[in-house]
Each structure stands twice: as structure tokens, then as C-alpha cells.
Length: 339
Image (tube, rainbow, N blue to C red):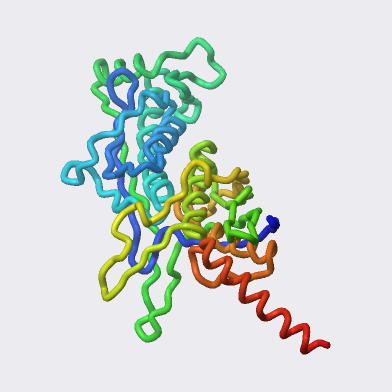
């Protein structure tokens, strides 16, 4: 017999450590051809942060996203961006890029305003075009503008940005402090189908709502959530690492079972776009937070479906069957007590 159930779980996650200050730095230059060079020690590990940084830089300076060039990330030659992890990449480096680009664009706007004899506040730039607000005749490409400033006036447009978390010193007696600058929150609902004959659990769907701050790239955020849910499914139902006498007894992927495409449920992502008030961009993060509620939501759904509480993960078919067996063994005794 197959029974269905639904379960919910919530989670929160801290971003940008404050007791030990987090920081990231960036240099930028508006260069020949209307391109924008961004130099920082960021490392791409698959989360798509480089795409997000290009979008931020393009939005702040008015160049086209395809004209943003990310320089070599060797920290011997570029500013330090610190580690790639802890859901800090967009939050720390994205804000550093924004600050650097705003400084560069301020210099660019001042130089173009001097060229056109207008106020710097009237300079506009978008998609590789520069113009004066309210004056259609004063318009040129970013490429031409950079050529005029660099070749004719000897002006090179550069900017730098440093973004740090607000440092909170540890209390010397208690060790207490504000550990994180920002927090993200999320809730997920999982629907499962449990086969009471085999103990197999299939996740049919997951609904994931997450507070991610200002959304830079919705498709990437949804992809992060979907990836986190898949990892959560593996954590809840399949992935078992075991040791004996200090040595692994799970030496390869033949025994360490991972989710395949057939195990991936339908994921409905809901993005809560609530800008963070403590940052220039209002961004937060989603890398690790989207994984937190998945396994508890699945465990709660199993309980809703068949009335057993799984207290050890993964909830393999063997463990589910054992829990059902114990439930059946206890029920007659409880019924006799009531009688």
C-alpha cells in the first residue's frame, strides 16, 4: 500500500561573520572599447557568481553585460576576496563590485559632464550608451566616450571598492557577540509517497520559499534552490557514510547512493525579494540556506503519511520498514491498555 503525506520545515542562516570581520575588495577600470575590467580574487565553484558580478557591474556603470571582463583571480595580483563559501559571494563581493563601480562611474560622469558642460547628475549610461538627460543630441557610445576621455583628455577611469561586515568585538568575559551581519530565512513543504510494503519513500514535490534579499538573477537563484533541494533529498533518503574502527566502510559511490534524475522531485521556488537594509545592493544569499529545511520537511511528510517518526538519516527503506514494524508491534499493546 502507498500512502501520501506532507511535511513542512523552516530554517535560517547567517551571512557575513562579524566577530572575525569578513571583507572583500575590488578594482575596476572602464577601458578601451567601452569594456569594464573587474579585478578581484573571486573564485567560481559552480554557483554562477561571475554572471551575477557581471550583471551588477553592468547595471552600475551602464556598460553591456557582455563587455564586462573579469580579470585573473590570482590574489598576488588582484585584491583579496576571501573564500568561496558560506553563502557570502554575492553578499560580500557583489557589494564590493557595486561600490567600486559607483566610484568609477562618478569619475566618468564628472569627466563627461565637463566635456558636455552640463551637471554630472544629468549623465546617464545604459547598455553601452551615454547621454545627457533631456538632451537627445548629446549622446554617444561608451566606446567613443572612453576614446575621447582617454586619448584626447588623458583621463583613465578607475575605481576601487571595499566591503566589510560590521565588526562586533567579542565580550572578553562571556565571549558573546553578534555573530552575523545578515540572516536569511526559508520554509519548505515536501510531499512524499511511502510504500508500506517496501519502505521506499518517493518525494513527489517540494515547495520552497526563501528570503534571498534583492534578486540579481532569478534563474540562478531558482537553480540554487533546486540544487539544494536535490542535495536535501539525498541527505534525507539515500546518502549514508559509515565507519568502523576509524576506517570508512563506504569507500566508493557504489555504496554511497546519490540522487539521480529519477529521484528529483518537482520543485516550486518562491523568491521573497526583501532587500537587505545593511548593504548598498540589498542582496543576501541562497547557497547553503536552501538545503537546510529539505530533510526535516521530508521526515515530517513521512510521519504525516504513515505515522512513524524517523530519528536517524538517511530514512532508507530498511529503516522505514523497521519503524513501521515497531509501530505495529506497539499498537496492539496500546489498544489492550485502552480496552
